[in-house]
Length: 251
Length: 173
Image (cartoon, rainbow over all chains, first blue to last red; front, side):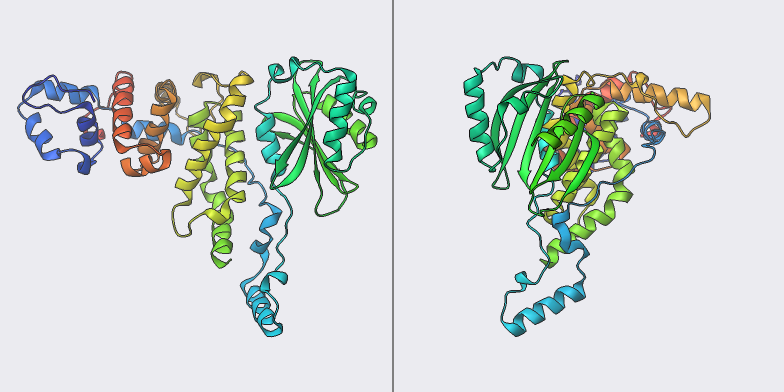
């Protein structure tokens, strides 16, 4: 707290700010008002804290976000689209036949949102996160085999290391909502961290390649043979396209 | 599940209306249009994921500002600084102005520049209190800080920006 210079009125700058902001519950407005009539120092201090709030608000009003679109709701919020009537009917039906209503409601266990979590995690990676990793080939192969086994995927180290412009660094088993999420980490020729992440596809559908930019990183995602894939990292769109195409065929 | 459904609907239906203000707050935090886009989008995504936790019939705007603040602190700022986008002067941004009066634009640019030069902790409270018009208590709740801290940061910010743009008279306060 900045104390007042005046001995008569030890108002702090915070008191004066609250006075200027009309926050009467945090200061004694009447006392300050009374003191202002007699104390020129206090007036000067108040002036030194005064700003043109209208100009400030107007200045920010000139900032326009431009065209925008709201992201889609995650699909595990399926009940959003389930009408109250349908829900009531389901509950009644469940009661009538003695089943739990939960069997009848279209809730999904789909793990939507995992890509956003991966993107946030990947955004924290830097060149230094991976540059020091230099395992022997045998160790790399052993680690890859152990990690891929978590999702029953078989792929050789040779295939993983054959993608152009990416140097394979390591494999890790992460977890999302209790399910294994595999991360294969690479460094691009430009030194940018890139990750191929794989999770079980609970919907069991096939989704063709989608490209997007997530938190400033290029990304490609697809699903195939019961797994979902996300390749993310770096700012080289061509590299992402080529590498994603390679992994789609290789795994 | 009724309350979850209601909360989810309230969030997904309300995002569109709050988005321009949310984006503006993100711009005040990040000082960059691109990063504000990223932060606003991430905030919406997280809000939709956590929509069932939103307390219905409360203030969606304050909840979103809170998420934006945490997202910026926890994730995006680190990545932005790493990518070299973190420290951008406001003059470098192509702030879209809807005002055609050049004098007003110059004044707005000066005011924005003064506010954007404030340290982030002061800048966000100045924005929430003086641009959005939230009370001290509301600011404290959104930022998870004591009211005394709100007051001291506003006082410090006022001292700095008052030198650059004073009110024409006390009537502006």
